[in-house]
Figure 1 (cartoon, helix red, strand yellow):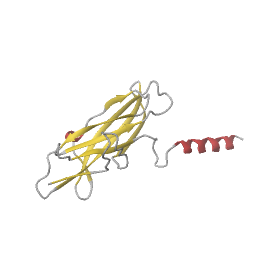
Figure 2 (tube, one colour; figure 1 turned 180 degrees about the vertical axis):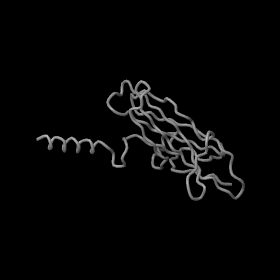
Figure 3 (cartoon, rainbow, N blue to C red; figure 1 turned 30 degrees about the horizontal axis):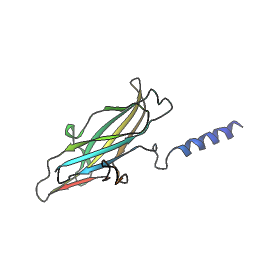
Figure 4 (cartoon, one colour; figure 1 turned 90 degrees about the horizontal axis):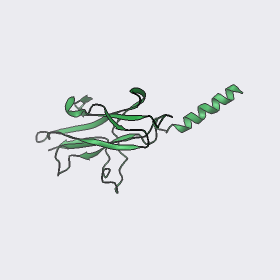
Length: 159
């Protein structure tokens, strides 16, 4: 009986986890990529759902960092592409927001390929109760949402 209960519980827990291995509603995307009105701008938008059972006391934190592709591997940009951890919400629902980074466009004939990497933490009283790291991905565009008319995994800035 105990074994059947454990198997049923494990099955229920697996069914609650999205197929891609993270919580429903958790994603990051590039929503602004070198537009004519803001040359060199790269915007990263993030969606963070509540986590766990103590949602009423929870705090959602995030850190957005930018990486550039050197032709063979992704490299960190350093402080110019790092927001540091920021408290963004209190776990009462899905929070969406982000930030825009500004970069000098590359020299003529060159290309700068960027992506965002987001670290998410769910905290209760300064203690981390959950965490996730995710790169930016496409597939979150919503034409009627002015913050999500674009949804890209990477941003290529070229001149």
